[in-house]
Structure formats: structure tokens, C-alpha cells
Image (tube, rainbow over all chains, first blue to last red; front, side, top):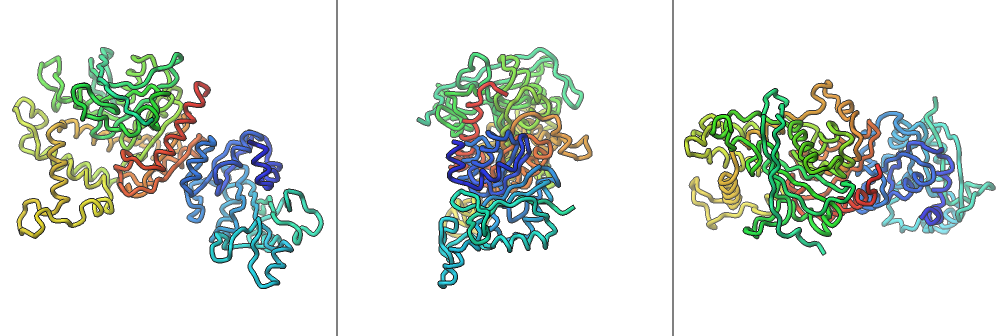
Length: 200
Length: 378
């Protein structure tokens, strides 16, 4: 189970690597609860997920993961300030409408935030735009007219947003094909994972 | 696969240890009617208590040998292969104290006078009920319930279990409920009670001696309740503005189908339910408020709880709205308790918790699968 999760979602391993044993975690848009289950089994985290879809709620319960059915877009006001060590938003940022507000909520509720998203600046994406088309790829598997993604960004864009929100970036992990990318990450990376906190 | 528990029969537990009510009243002797389904395992760790709502009772599932049509009120949820699976769990349903289905209540004979208790039956609270339920658990040899489950007023009892007996319940399933009633809810209850209290046949609660029943009051109380348990949409779907006779009659007789339905439901209810019990049950609803003596701080109220929770609400339930369930969730989160919350899209209003809905049943089934899988480990 564990290895299959990691194979299917390379960003999970990067996220898990930042999370110490026994941390408390809030996973926003937690899907079927795979990440929380993985973190519980490998890091003994205590956690909750927030999820909107009915099917995922039922799946989280099968995974024995605490899940709260709620819409991220209407806020996560039920969670108190600083009540989690980490608030995670994996592969969901690009699909949120109120992205700024959500980023602020993440650093309100968590001591640290961890966000992963597809890098729109990946060279193949840029190439497709240059050719005159919106990119379609493994990381962005949607046509422009049926995509849930409304706020795609590059690594640079995300870092500018963090600066604008006075959020300090503590770590960055850029990957392609499940492997770390150290050279020219903003061109060669398909997926980015950031760790950050509110600038004190 | 999803079979009925089949033929069941009710049992009676007799208690001679005096019960002191929250009000200070004392009942030296009382009896509770209950039913059980499934088998209690060797270490007695697979018991589930089902708490009933306002007009409920002990007959949760199955049917009686001499009355095949009298099917338990939650038969769709409880049985072999059903979400509350009697192949795995030992399920206990009871009629609460003050009820009118065999447990000691206002219509029971007071041994001290030889007459029905009537108006002299103590006002009973959720806390009192949970104490009697704990005594019933003792009687059955159950030290700790795998789960206590309830909807509406039953959900309040399930929550109270976690507060009063944190080491005697592993999971609480609180469905379509609230941490306390809103003013609007209390107002509805008071209108219902007023209908009963002002019925000329009520006789201050001692109508039994007069050989009458405050049928009109009970009927009105039930009609009002019924309206609030459904959603506007559900009522529109089911009845619309359909006329019973196809044309307007310009009279106060039944003209619209919804009127026919409500009056039928009201009459049916008035024929079998006790007026004093209705008053008691609505008062128990009004009084429940675990945060009352903590400056309204529900977070502090749940500080004693240890159970894991499943909280379920229904989108069209306007008497116990999702927002009220989220207040419970918030307090559980504050106390870092294990909680899952499902908000079920349903069009049936408050009554949704008794209906068969795919998502609702999936959530219940999956959750109880986990409860069964964890066995006796804490």
C-alpha cells in the first residue's frame, strides 16, 4: 500500500520527508485520504482531511482517516489559529478560485504550510504555448475548456505570490518523472513542492 | 444479503435502585423496554446502543411474530448485511424512560397511588436518559459500547454518552443533531406543547382518570412537527398544490393533498402516542445544552470526551441544519478528538436520517466497518 502510494504520487514522498514523527497535519483537499493514511503509517501523524466530494468522504472513512466534508473555497474557518503543525495542499492550489485567501488561511491554521502544484513553466508546457496551444500533459491532463484548473502558475509566480503575502519560503522541491531536478528547475521541473510559513 | 433481523420480541428490564433526576425528583422503581439483535461476543465488545428520537421506541428492527407489518423504525439501517450489521454487532434499542411503549412513563401506574403518574411524572432530561441507559448496559453486562448511535434527539443522547461516560463508549455516531436547540426550535416545541396543554381533554395531564385523550392537541402537535421535519422541496415534490377533489370547494374541509396527508399523520399519531410523553420528550430537547453551565463554551463541554465521532448532517434539514453539526465538529476539533463529518445532499429534510440514501448508507457502512475491524483495541 505504502509503496504504491509513493509510486503514484511522487510529491507525497517529498511532503512526507518534511514532516517529523508525531506531527499534527491538516490536509486540504485530501482526496481519498491516501496521503494522511501514508503519513499516519510512516510518521505517526495525527491528522484531519478536508474534502468536498461524496465519494472521497466515503473512501477516507475506509482509509480510517478523519475527514471533514467542507468546501475549501468557503474557508476553513472551523480550524483554529495555529492548531496544526502542518497544513498541506497537494495538487489543489491550481484549482482554487480564492487562492490568496486560501494561502493566508494555510499560514493562519498551520505553523507551516506545504503546497504542491504542477509547474506551468515546464519547458514542454512553454513549447505547447509557443506552438499556439494550451498545454496538455500527464500533470495537466485537461483540455482548456474542461479543466478544473483556474490558477496555473510557474515557480516564479508562486514565489512572487508568497512575497506579496509576506510568506517566507522554507524549502522547495522540484521534480520531474518522480526524480529531483536541481538544474534549471523552473524549466525542467513538472511538479513543485514548497514549504513555507508566515513571515514573523 | 440485506436481510431483516426477522422476528423479534421486546424484553423488560426492572430497576429497583432509585433514580434521581436532574430536576431533583426521585423515582424509586422503573422499568425499561428494550430489544436486542445479533449476538454479544465473548468479550462483550461488539455492542451498539441505538438511541431514539422524539416519538421513537425500542422496536428498531425486524418485526413481531403476531404483527408482521410492525417493522422497526430503523429496519433499513439495522440488520444482517446492513450498515449496522447484526452479523457483527449486538444491537440494543430501548424505549426511554418517560416513553409510552412499555417503559415507565406518565401513562404507567404509580405503585404509590395505583393511578397513572400523569402530571406527577418527573420532567426527564437527556442526562437522566443516559444514566438509565448505562444501568441497562450494566444489566446486559456491557461495560463499553463499541458505538452509541442516534439521530436528532437520539444524537443528543449519543453525545451525552461521550460526556458522561467517556470510558464506556468508543464511538459516537451523532446524526442530524445539534449541541442545543435554537430559539426557533424551542418555539416550535412550545407551539406543539401549547396545542396539548390547552386541549380541553388534557385535564392538566391527568386525563387518564377521565377516560379521555387530548387527541386534538396531539394531532396539532404532530402536524406542526411533521411540517418542520420535511423540506419545502420534498413537500412540493410529494404533494405540490394538488387538489384532492380536482377543484376548489371554497370550504375549510380538506382540499389540498398536503392537508389530507398532515391530518392523516396527525390522527394516526394521536391514536397511539401519549400526550404527556410528547411534552416530556420536547422538554428534553429544549433542555439539552452541555455548554449551559460553561458559559456556552461547547469546547469546554467536550473536554471530557474520549470517543471517536462520526457526525452526519443533511443539506435540507432546516431544524437541525448542517451548521449546527459543524458546531459539534468544531468543538471536537478543538479538543483534538477523532472526528469525521459528512454533509449528505438529501432532499428529505430532517427525516433524511431515517431514509435510505446511497451516500449516507455508504458513510455509515464504511465507518462501522472500521469500528468492527478495530475490535477491542482502543
